[in-house]
Length: 267
Image (cartoon, rainbow, N blue to C red; front, side):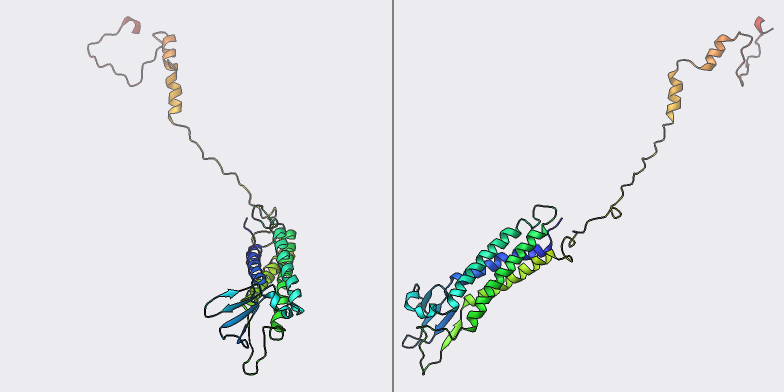
């Protein structure tokens, strides 16, 4: 029997979302700051929840491990909350996959819907744990305090969303969808009755009918073979027992000799 599609859908989306969330957590590019005051125009500051990097768009050189130079940025309330929730999301996703894997029908006749549904619930929660800090950080994107942001009346602030925010949104949505679809297996409308899971009743089971064997006609030569197997016939036996006068002549025999004389035994 095939694996239900809802379990395949969830088991594919969950690992993909986990990889995107891991990249979003580790990479230091939650937001980028351009047009820095008293800095070259090609210098860009990339800020994440763990590290800060400066990148030169002209020479493509990058310098990281600058979190000690901007403690004001890491003192914002969203930064420690985002750290804890992103790490918790990664751990919960792994727990959900570990719980849902034995429930998926990859090597069994029927899936374990309870385990698969509980694993889907954990994966759904991990997606929610990812989306909350991502959305909160996006809402506070321009208002986060940082020494890298120097207000210059001659230049407008150029703060942009980093690629970590995009990856976090995509990964969180994938985990939410995958976990929700897997959790539907616990419902009565889907549990155990989709894609051939409905048990077959006794009335629906096919009845094996006995096929009649083909009739074998005995060979015609069987009767003849029985007669030919006897070394003598009944007619010859009667002829031997009768006296010569009692012997009957064969019908249809004609004496063709005109000069023949009767024997004494025939008188």
